[in-house]
Image 1 (cartoon, rainbow, N blue to C red):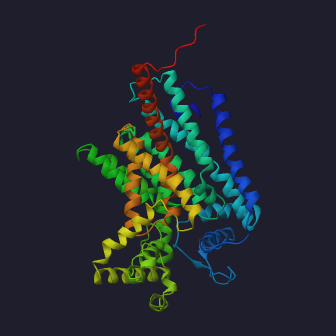
Image 2 (image 1 turned 30 degrees about the vertical axis):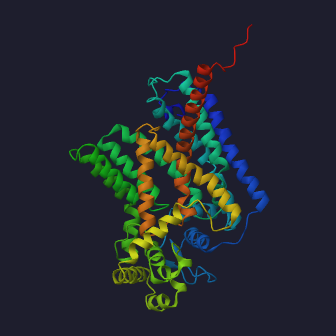
Length: 457
């Protein structure tokens, strides 16, 4: 089954490949456990973690997907919710059912799950390199040198993923990231393969994968729309059925969640109501008029004007609609603020500087900054093969940019999936630059007569 990931093209020994994948998983696990030993497994929760864990405990106790205000017994005031997508809380509820409600168990299981991202990164990078070497004057039946190059790039990508600072930071949290990143890598592997098949069945599978991903974070909807439009456009708007199948697969996967929300709230809620809070928190006069808040998110409930306006709406759906109405009213009243609000958010997202201090800025510049610059260089130099994998990363860039401009992506936290996906592309670009430099240097030394003479046996 492992060799099927490579379509039996690389000729790798199955046992050696399995050993390598297990070793990569253990590397990621050991790195994260080392962080756990140094920092400890904190039993306290921040606001976002509390919301995920609170809903998980509600599910494990048989109360349904519900939450209660912090400090309030869950059984006394459980409130059904659709504020966040249910995937992370459902996964945590399984842990709580098996091992109890101690938060440290949730953090430990999160480490075990997200360590899978390391071997998955190897799979994705090897798949990208298979397409890459096919365009570098190498036959589709990979030569030994191409196999070696693909293995090295994939191995380094996996190791970078294992020690990536921002990823390690979020790997021991009780949030969505520990579950989202491995699932995102699996989705990219499967979707890229289905894109090469170009049938209605492949479109349906692609939609199902994006729908599954949306149970953790709602990025699957814009990716499904972009994928369907791109596929239709690539066929000069003639072949519509696979694009429709993609949309069908997405909605089929989300149909249980949509039906549940309709039964509970008597409203059509395809994703989550969290978006309205984010939308109002980043698009309001308090952000626009204060230079210190440019590009920031302010909690609407911490702004007295909005808190007083929202308190008469205890129902989650009514409150979400009111938040959206307030935000749209503000934006319509001040249309000149719209491009500036979007620009400031994008500036924060693409910035190489962290607001957490000099050391954090150095880390961001050496990780996100280097990967982003290498990717741009690769695009400008046409280093990358025009493959399904490249189209996926470009669509993810477009989606992330649109979501950030309209809402907000949490900046460093929201940018994390993009940073992880950029790792193999940055390495491919760096490899191309290195090969060109080496070839140029060798040619220069030979033409000037300074090349090192070969040793005589």
